[in-house]
Length: 243
Image 1: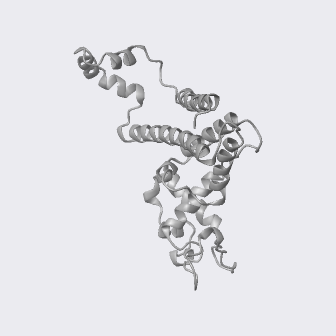
Image 2: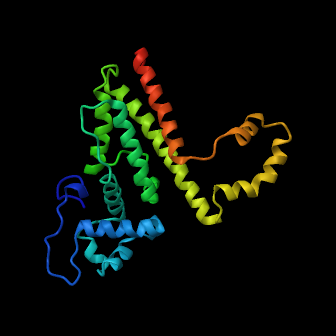
Image 3: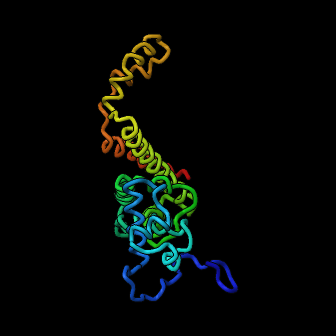
């Protein structure tokens, strides 16, 4: 919604309309909760102002006083999910802080699988998203070995890239299971004869080792171990003074 003489007023700074008597009272929070419910059930394609209005027994035109566009609604939904994350108290050790943020982001994304589709790109600007970002950057900025905000940003970016990528893979696997009806074990059993023939060619010795010797899938443990690799790498750069 543009201002009279300036740039658009973002939804974070735009007040809600005054409450008025109506058969179905509205609020920005109620609209966001309804939209999240639709997305949790059927994905982002199920979210529109018309469908949200129907869920609230309100016409879509009433919603425009609270959100001007679908993009604003998505921004509010994303920030509501960030609001489920409890940032660690400032001043603590950087490593537990970053681990807590990454694990909570993963948990939130697994509760709301559509959330991963909206991660990445430019930073989110809602107050909860900014609190999450501040917690991560602040934990790293307190490390004396990280000299300069650019080094802080690179370290934080590495943690975020790992977390987002790992969660995207988990959510994608869930989606495949829903579409195919095959869990990981069933899929492996179905593809086993083909894999055996391919590995017998001798062209994939490392892949054969993976198939033969790797431990059973453990999403929680795998995520934690991968995160340790990233945090270990950051710690090693602290120790050597590299930027």
